[in-house]
Amino acid sequence: MNESIRNTIQRLEEYMAERTDALAIPREAGAFMHTLVLASRATRGVEIGTSYGYSGLWIAAAMQTTGGRLITIDRERRKSEAAAANFADAGLGERVVLETGVALEVLGRLEGPFDFVFVDADKENCIAYVQAVEPKLSDGAVVLTDNTLTHAEELAGFLAWIRNHARFASAHLTIGNGMELSVRIPEGDG
Ligand SMILES: C[S@@+](CC[C@H](N)C(=O)[O-])C[C@H]1O[C@@H](n2cnc3c(N)ncnc32)[C@H](O)[C@@H]1O
Image (tube, rainbow, N blue to C red; front, side, top):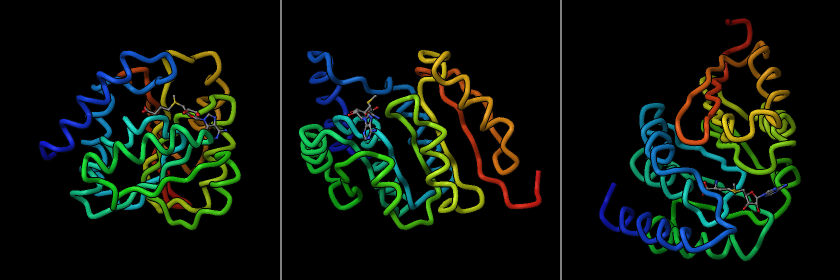
């Protein structure tokens, strides 16, 4: 990761520390996602829940290396615009497409395939989000869902669903706010 991206991440951390409306993933979760995108060589990413672009910076930084692109969705225009400025500041503007709108509507009109999905918006819609992207996932695609520790009760139904899903292998990670790492498996496998 180059210095420009590191500086933007640092500046955004300082900016978010002064605000109450920026609920970003912790740094260790960002470092993990960066590593995961590199390891899986993902190039077609979707993020549900942009906010100020903190998690997106870590994903897009890896996409810079893999030659990929991240589509990131948030319903708040003000946040999408702030995130766009942060991506540009990091020199990652070309790696990111910002979609402003209600996630389920946006997901419905996006063209796949996708090989990396980060789910970090309203917790009650997690099953619906994964169901919306399911037909557009490539075999081996990674779906990472945040807040399994901080929102355990709200995510209990989702976790039961994805862990019993015939087309996902899924494991729990105690990184950051807690994350569920789910991998799309080919039909007939598992
Ligand atoms: C926890 S924040 C995302 C943090 C971000 N992933 C990060 O770590 O930097 C959740 C975001 O999801 C957005 N959001 C919540 N419900 C949404 C929906 N139904 N459609 C689109 N965006 C939504 C909120 O506006 C908020 O910015």
